[in-house]
Amino acid sequence: MTDDQVIALREKVNRAASSPLGRIVTGLPDRRARIEETRIDLPGRRLMLRVHRPKKADRKLPLIVSFHGGGFVGGTAAQNDWLNSHLAARCPAVVVAVEYRLAPEHPLPRPIEDGYDTVARIVDDADRWGVDPAAVAVMGESAGGTIAALVALRARKDGPPIRAQVLIYPGTDWTETVLEYPSIEENADNPTLSLSRLRAARKLSLPPTLDPRTVSPVKFDNLADLPPALVVTAGLDPVADHGRRYVERLREDGTDARLSCYPRATHTFLSTPGLVPAARPARREILAFLRERLRPGRQVGDERQRDDRHRP
Image (cartoon, rainbow, N blue to C red; front, side):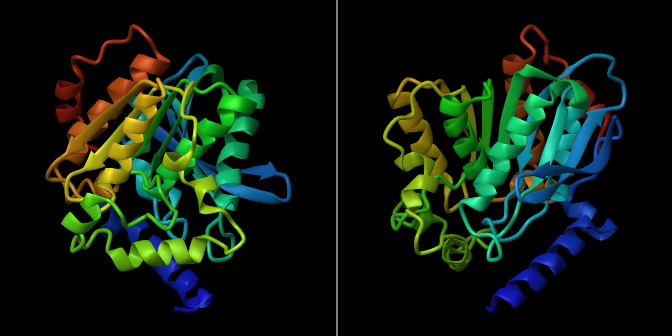
């Protein structure tokens, strides 16, 4: 496909995902949260943000910055409304979903720069955003999980302080060994992430001049002193072992890391809750982890009952 064809296909897929019919698959936003779109000015570019806030909040809230999946080539912040709005309402927190720049127009590392610069700018202007700069988390699915992990790695040295990272079926290896994991062979025929799509994402997003190790968290020499991580994987996902291996590396270097695998789930399952039942318990687990790290002392024991009553 030409670059223009890739861009046209991306726009078509994003329109479908945001349509009323698409919402049957991607899930309806939580009615207890409001969603607003705004823009943020960063050096040399302006990004769109999709901001989720609880409808009832009278104090500064934790900040969760969210990055969608799509192989650095596709996807849109709106595909995660089901998850992000629920976290905003139930944590509660301000959840900011970033429309980071995409390849082939904007190859790596630009999406990573967008992620880090957005987090840093919001924290610097915490009062205007109504967030607590000492209670910040990053979260991402698939390629967005790569971004979240790399933001946490950079913040370790340059700040701002991050207290938690949630990596949802993340791609952690974009080097030439990207396909050299047992789960790749075991799930090669899974339609939610074909090997041809994985190869295309790498080809389109990685310029020849970029060392792929710099955007592959699992290849970093030192993974110590990072915020606690919850890594959610899917048993039927070709890149399941990307997440598993990253957890092993984090633990080896002394970072608190949890691995949670949903054996009957597929890649993208948390952005397709209308198709995969595992999305609901996984969302509860993510909420409990973020509450634990961002709002210590809050109880989530009644979450299952409340979640069953409200089915956004």
